[in-house]
Image (tube, rainbow, N blue to C red; front, side, top):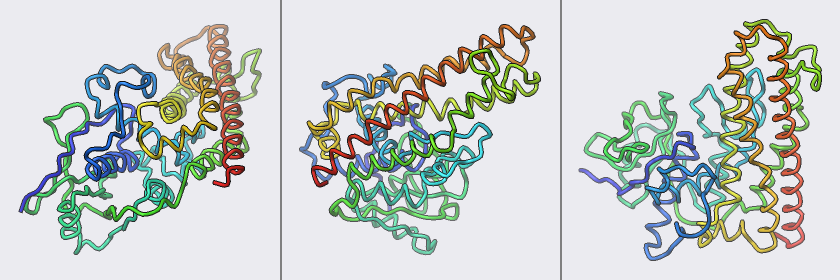
Length: 371
């Protein structure tokens, strides 16, 4: 027996190969095949989904569509607003959404899984009985629904199964190369299957997604995560610190540059999905985006232009690594780099506070509408 679903949506470089990405690809396939004549995406409407102006997206309209949905889902779970501690110890919010740099960015916690299925209006089952895996996969594929598999090997943790060929499994094309497929897992490497069920009334709405974002951003402020960044990167005149990078040893400066460099990718680049979710106009024909861009809310989302300062902060602070701050002996130069970095981080901290205020305002509007 052999069957493979026609899933030819390559992955975007801005996405981590996590549960949210796998869910997005499966969701788009199921939605578009459920209504072949419906148009949920218009590549000729609106600007870039997240502003990187990648030529790869321009060459692949299907990839643009999936980016928009990925950013929406990554944002509504609250994941794109999580901030890593400087010492890389997972925060309570990271553990909630599942973003853990030590687990291949899995984002497959019970919270994230249940929210995504509930937010999009699908019933689902989590199957852990290995004796039933083959039959479950064949049944789902035969009904036109791909399956998400959680694998024991974290390389990556979650795989999307798009077909079967006898006892072998099939995964869709990998990243930008349509001729290359991702290595499918063996049955004995699978820990659990996530099976899409019937379309059902949504259990979570936009208001629930905004509440997720609010919870994460409030946590960041209450735990003073941004303040800790300024302490560890400070030590100059404008940002005095007894534990700053200016007076740290070369070994400690290198450690902090590496720690911060790793944090930058998560804190700033992954946050691009926040701007992608609230700035993508290409999905307005879809129910989730109609809800997001309700006329009473659209004007609010225009206030998120300031979110790009988070990305700018990532670029500025990356100089610690680029210029190898651990090899610099001139303390005045180190102090200047410290001041520039802290200026960027402080600006990003202020921007996040402003964005939280907008999220709270949107929730109040939805409360008044009775949603």
